[in-house]
Image (tube, rainbow, N blue to C red; front, side, top):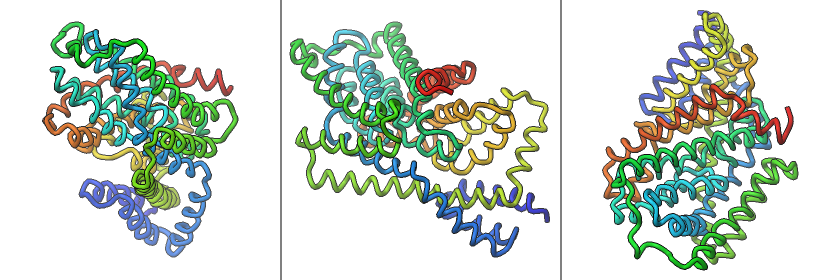
Length: 439
């Protein structure tokens, strides 16, 4: 049998294993070793060693645990609660004020953490009880909280973008800058949709009761400044230093993690238990991402060595489809993969397969990476995985899971609209990198 066909069987076996529920990382390694040995013998073991060492030398990946650690610390610092309280006070007299408060808080907080679980959980804890008490619509409330919390995976500094950069072979700095406007576009779509619905159907988001509002201007300013100024400090440490060319992504991540540590200490929320929990969750998440990266790197090397990757690329390029049509097809495949799979598996396993096609079509890889990032955000709102639903259900047990799913579906449509905008107008992703970093 030709090696290329062995690779096709390898890919089919992987998909079968994933859908059967086997752990992805171990499935990748075992299948890569077995089919690699069948395809080219003992050389598969040397390939495993070289691929693992090569990946572990990638300095940019050191930013992953630092950004994750920063996010977990800020979760405990109470900054998100202060931001939400200040927006609640400012907009309390308008319809849908809690939706607006959640989305503004989530957008600002997304610039400091890319941990979806933390964002959805904290926003759900502080907003869901007040939404229930104020008579807000369950589906729209669930959609706002989950979609807003998911912005952290796109708006930089994003762990996903740190991982996509080395896989696609583009600058993480350029990806960070390119993702800013698409992230803000999605936030604007969510906000406009929520407020328009409340304007047309006021019962979906009534004004807050008088006892839930803050009338003192001084108190409002105090809450707003205490929430925004520390966040601005973190944003400059993480994102500002990268864009200004003062630090690499890894150095900026270290600065941001240090800033988060200082802020948590300043707000007297840093205890031994908090530090231990943040460190433990950081180790858990980082281990999962990097172990999957290593396994995928080995799988990809075997897959490429068998020649299947080139065969698939040639077959796709031979299709009578124009470049934009081919890109749309790839986006559709990634969108569908996001339903059963989480983003690390898609980035590590399937992007290397699609990359030769993008290179052959001479499409901008920064634009492609941004499209992928926007596309993969839908994975958090699409069942059956849809982890955002389970995070919210855990902190808002009164809400039915079906209602949460239905609410998320509305915002997943908005995400697709945002993706179409970035697809049709590449400058949404490319204008800011061109302006700030040059081509």
